Image: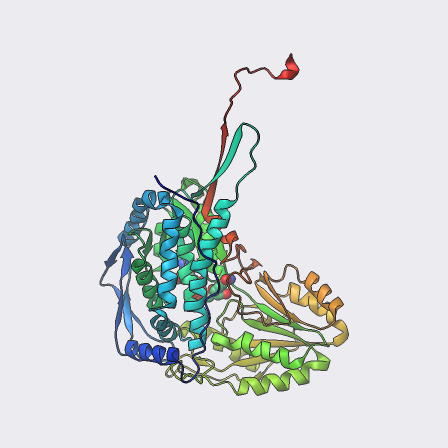
Length: 541
Ligand code: NAD
């Protein structure tokens, strides 16, 4: 068979388009948005390359206009989930044995389809279904997902090229096998790119997958599958099921062939999944890989010599873009007393100029939060803060769910560094500020480190290098993505590999070779060109 050492082209990050008035991309995305708005999209299950219409459906409604139905998705039964597992296992042999370059070609083509002909539609679907502004959709659903697909192809080659030393008359090799079984991908609502990456990174490494998207991301999930199919993904390699999360999970985790979970979502759900896996551990043919990126309580810490305008801007963007629904969103800030007035004035000016509304109006910086339950949870904290003695709502605090789930960008000031909104993840547009005495800056770093169980992202703002060095060391374990004089959001694939430890996950760094390696099981091969023929060693003579 003819062969060669293949390699893909140099990969670069997908450029983010501006969508400024008068640009062709703005026109295209608005056209796609308006066309989709007046249609009803039906989302089936995808099992063994077939579209499965179960007849048990749920409406899909945009969070910014919850009475407007834009489609519906079909819900799986236990039998459907079992079919998805069986079809993944049936596809495994051919897929695992396919040359890596043939597998990778599918995802490289998918990235080109996504960033080319499907760009406007994918952005429009993410804007409508998940209530993202066009810019938030572009950096996520197009740029980041295309980056995941292209860079993972590069990392795969890097891993495969990693080989052991050999010695005279011996040739040592390492084979990177896919896991023996199937991988379960469970994805969150807040990033279309994560929904696309979690099933595909194991698949790129030769694994077969059962994928369960979030019920509030079904709309753009359909687009992901359609692009992968158009790019030539064989039937059964990725099977998408939707419906009851607990039923699907019970069924999947009770399969002896379950070989790994690729999860992103909240900490509680991840801990529940880990427990379930533990309960079933004796059933499995192989120890499952458990990879989970979970919640955060991400901080911004300011030293007295930092620029208050830069801090206020980092807080505005870091806390309120995508309504604070980024795992990396700034949600607690520590500001020195001498700088508080300046930071507050700038923050107030910026936040009060934010426009909120429908994403189709491109002058809006914020839109609605994802669901009724998210709205109720977040506004509950705001209502409490209005009453609590140790907290005060100093900016925003209003909300209205009559048309969409809209919550104003809200800033709470607290005198209690352990106030509930300094500790718990709200996952909404709420920032809590604690003002510390300038001289107690070392104690404030201790607070940053010890206040929350999470360790996802965090930012420090300072000029004095001694302070930067000390704070970086002190907060070594407080964030898996640490920013110096920058906001704690906006990680880019191949630039800031993403993930946190502590309660925030297994820190397997999505969009890096460290993630891909989890979906492989190495076989070491030693070949001897001159095997010994006498059992006695020379020292015995
Ligand atoms: P979620 O935990 O509610 O849902 C995530 C996924 O888990 C969904 O597919 C959901 O249907 C599923 N799920 C829910 N209950 C389940 C159960 N009992 N069994 C099996 N699956 C179940 O999270 P979400 O609201 O979609 O996303 C927000 C959360 O995700 C936040 O906590 C955020 O911090 C986190 N997140 C983390 C990262 C990261 O990289 N660390 C990235 C994005 C989001």
